[in-house]
Length: 576
Image (tube, rainbow, N blue to C red):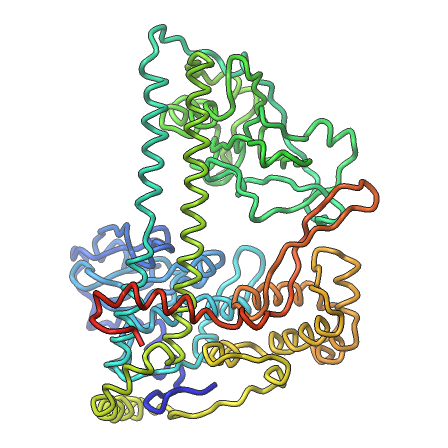
């Protein structure tokens, strides 16, 4: 990749200490109050510590990770790392902090601003690369410290770092919409309060008299979209409404489908989990979810309402509310660290039953709020994509190109100071150089300057997959349907793929599929959904596919210009 003349390329460990230890001479008295940061205290959306605790040093001196003011925390464990749990430590009690051992701590040297370092490690491209370096198995995969030691950082001078940080922080502030979600939650709560508290009869009815219950399937969800039916699991119902963005599939007999197929009269509730806060969470099944066959897994219970005395939207909202949690408290049992809610105990839970017209009005409000939430999420996704593009532009030097020209003398002096700091740490510095990619991907793709940095950060396997994928799609003229087993198998067995990946061994199908997903997340290929008719059932399915980028998709610079103009009144100049 090409970096500006006043930038340097250094290893991450050249500009920060990795997981520094608390020295014996730095240990305070045991009764000193310090900040404690469990993993849950870091807000992945805002990228900050929003729920810190306070403890004495004696309570946290052993068994926790230590850090201090302006250190950068980076979650190393899955899925926290992928979700973006990272933050700059600020406003620590007595300047000291302790937290989860699942944090890597990066302590910046004077050569780098902690906020710039934070922006670098939190970008999606960095997290995707870190995920490819995971070690461990199952849910215990972690980013090893050796990975951070290998990472190279494009390093501007301190004045330019501050300029980049200011622009990115302003972009973050402009795109914050979380407050709107809180207002929506209050609307539902107020409507539910009215239904529960304004009733004159005060009668509470046992749930078993109002619904039919059934447990879900225990069949392993390892089928593909081409051969199975979608199955809802605990993560799909945790938010109070069904989320179908991450689906798995099962193969069931027709008799099982008849028993387990969901309808718009149903509510799903979590019956078993290691976290007692998850048990009892529920979501109603709406028309758009059950328009085609969909079933549910064994850790969920289906509650089927009759639509005459009880509606699913009201039932689910009640169960998720403080009223519902209190009503279920005695029904939940905990054994050997596992909390459970049986169908028998659930049937004994009592709830108020408003008249059906009042429930219908509540359902209309619930559906309206759900649609507003969908629009808010769409707005958040667009803002996230725009911030991602802005970050890529900033960390490649494109964003501040014009600004550098107008501050040339200041930056030249700042570069001398920075380079002296780096040499004191024995860093090997690459100044304003062109780093050549190790593969011929550039011969196959027209990568615009804003994407040069991304290309240089890919692993060798990712580069080979990208080149093979591009060659294959250009030859076939079609997107690659990765959820069609036959189509994907032909791709994996194609000569253009096997020749490039032969050094990695055989049976790389799952790894190739994951890599294509990572390349799509990085914006280097496009992820699409294509219709396909099932030859046996005749039903129309929609399958995930990938295709090369079109010419107009190589950059979001037009969107960046709009973002820059929106910031211009506050900054006094274009963010270039």
